[in-house]
Length: 118
Image (tube, rainbow, N blue to C red; front, side):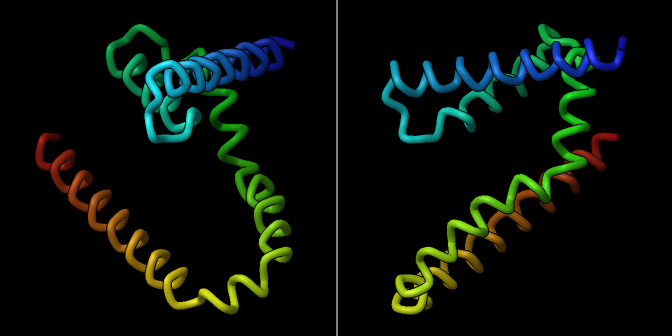
């Protein structure tokens, strides 16, 4: 029962940050998804110590554990656009490879900096 309460509370906190991100993007007319803005707000709150990690840990662990299931709907949705993907395969492939390399280089660089700091 205690774990269920922690899970529900954590989901509520995550949803709150998502809604806050959506509101921020809408009000400030930022060119980014509201979920990303909410995630950045939550990361800042965690880093500043305003949000204790224990409040969101159970919900975050559950979401990470079943992350594969969250990719099924977009994967199924891609099947609707096979003809478009077939026509535009080169820019799509270039964007996927380029963005993957950018993420790998960024995360690798950040990890090396964090390891040097200890």
